[in-house]
Image 1 (tube, helix red, strand yellow):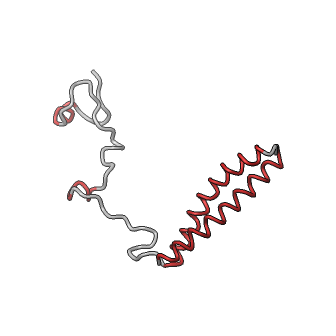
Image 2 (tube, rainbow, N blue to C red; image 1 turned 30 degrees about the vertical axis):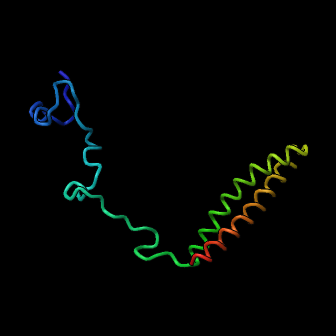
Image 3 (cartoon, one colour; image 1 turned 135 degrees about the horizontal axis):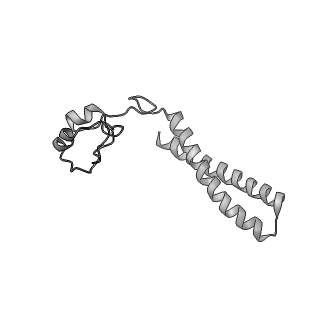
Length: 120
């Protein structure tokens, strides 16, 4: 006879489990907060800015960071292709790709920051 952890035969029967079934793990039995069990809804989480909206400077900063990340990815692709096409290898290739990534990241980040500033 297989017994589940910390449950008797009577408890397993009341949970609707067959003789060999183990039932829910004690660690995962209460994975949701009690609030969701009572109301059927999840509690609303508070973001990094609390209940208020981010300031205009925060939006411009976020636009620059997003643009810089996208520009870096595009610069990695285009820089690698163009540097390999002209025959760069090794340290020279890494320098050329890094320079292209920084240039395209800075350019695209600047334009995204300007666009977010216009929206404020």
